[in-house]
Image (cartoon, rainbow, N blue to C red; front, side, top):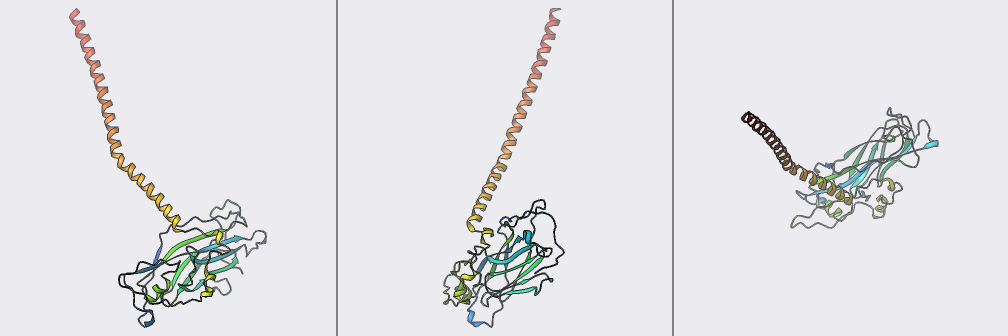
Length: 296
C-alpha cells in the first residue's frame, strides 16, 4: 500500500525515539444527552471519570527492501497510558488516512485500536473514538501527524531503531451515569473518584466480551518495547525534581536582597576608607606645610 503525500523527505536520517510528553493535556467531553436511556440510572453530579490514553505511531525504515513508494512500515494506535485495555470505554476507532490509500477510512471494531500500513509520506491522521452507550454519546476526534522521518536530518537511518511519536491525553467524562461508574470502578485503565456520600451503585453490566478483554491489553504488544513510559511513578519523580528546582530558585531569589545589601555595605565601607585615607593624606600635607613655615 502506498500513498502520495507531498510531505516526503529525503536524506540519510537516523531514527530516534521521542521523549515523554508532559501530562498537561485534558480533553473534557460534553455531557451526554441520554434522557431516553432509562437503563443507565441517574447522573452523578459533580463527579468526573478520567481515562488516560496515549496515541501516536511507530515507523520502521525498510532499508534495502524500501522502494520509491514504500520506504516505511508504520503502525498508528490508541492505547491505555499504562497499556491497559480500553475496550471497556471505547467501542470502536475510525482511522482516516490520506486519500491516496485504498479505502482510506478504516474502522477497528475491537481492541487493540491500531492500524498498520506501508508508505513513504507523512500526513495527518484523524482518529475518531466512539464510546459505549453508557459512557458518552459524542465521539472524540484526535489529530495525529504521522511521523516517518526523524528530526535530525544529518544522521543515517536504521532498520532496527524506529521513529516513535506519542501524545498523552486524559479523556474526562463529567457527570457519569451510575451504570458507567459501576462498570468501570475497578477497571485499571480508568481513574474513578471517591463516591459522594449516600451513593450506592447498581450491579455492573458488562458491555464487552470477557474472552476478548486480554486481547486489548497492550502490555505484551510486539511493539511495547518502543512505547513511551507514561507511568505515574515517573511523573511523580519529574514533579518532585521540578518542585525541588523551583524551591531552590525561590531560595536564591529570597537571598538576593540580602546579598545586594551586603555588597552595597562593602562598597560604602570601602569608599569611606578611601575618603579617610585621602583626608589623612591632606592633613599630613597641611601639617608639614605649617611646620616648614614656622621653622622659617
